[in-house]
Every structure is written in structure tokens, then in C-alpha cells.
Image 1 (tube, one colour):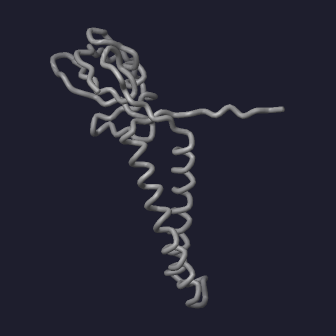
Image 2 (tube, one colour):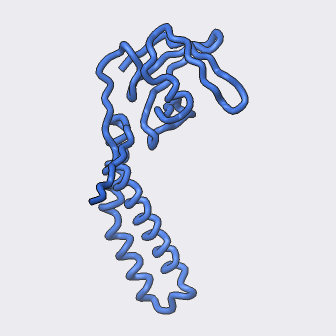
Image 3 (cartoon, one colour):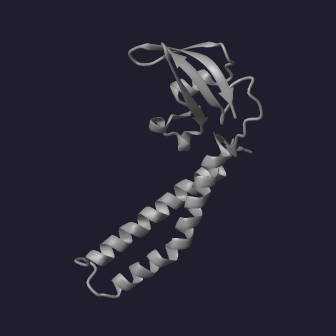
Length: 156
């Protein structure tokens, strides 16, 4: 008998809550999209019916997003940092690069937002920082260069 191995991804509670909320909102709005599609279909010729084409695309994109979000929800484990001795998913990490200090938030794959300093634990930067401690020198190999961070702080 063949058993499937379930693979999980990790996410912060905040990220999981946001994805769950989006899923619930789309689920509650879906009947309205179906109603609009039905109304547009009742207008007659579907081949040149812009309202029908739009409603059909809207419903398809909603259903596609719902399937994606459901898969994420079903395959996610929430990671809640419990300590500040070493970096884990959910940690806020202050690093020093040259003379500049800045703080990064280590998050799950589906909640990464580099412009807001939220880096995925699966990215080169996030992965290199996991399990490091204050004082560690972290070398991150990027395509064209090596970045060297010094970990100066870890918070929850």
C-alpha cells in the first residue's frame, strides 16, 4: 500500500489568520458571483455578452483562489516563537550590515513581503538566519555577491 507523505509549510499566526480571513470572505462572496453569472446568462446570447464573460472570469478566478487558499490552509503549521535565544519562524531579527542596523521579520512563504522587511524562512536570507544567535556572523551567498550580516538582536 502506498502512503502519501504530507508536506507542510510554516507560517506565523498573523499570516495564517490573514489567509483564513481571505478564504472566508471569498467563500461568503461566492454565491453573489454565481448569482451575477446566472443573471448575465439570462440576458441571451453569451458569445457577445460582456457581463456574462466578466462574471464567468470573476467566478473562475474566485474558485481558483479558493482552491489555492484551501491548499495553503490544509498544509500549513503555525509557528509561534517561544524564545529569543536563537532565530526561528516568527522572530524579529535585528541585523547589522556595514554600519546600518535594521530589523527583519522571519515569516512563512505565503506571507513574505520584502518591501516591508518580512522575509520567508525559505528565502536565502531567511534560511541563513534560522537557528542563529546574537553575535553570529551570517554569510549569505546571492547570485552575484556575498552579504555578511551580524545578528545584534532577536525578539518575539
